[in-house]
Length: 59
Image (cartoon, rainbow, N blue to C red):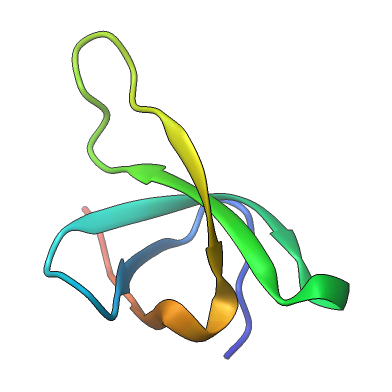
């Protein structure tokens, strides 16, 4: 799966949508935050790329 900054994705462990903030393909990890953003922002956290299951279309 190709991941790009700004993509919206779901993770293996849930149904919530997250936005990809950065991708490190060399180390198979990415940084995501909850989408849509919370009123005061959403924390960014690191996940292994293998936990990303698919892209989500947003409108």
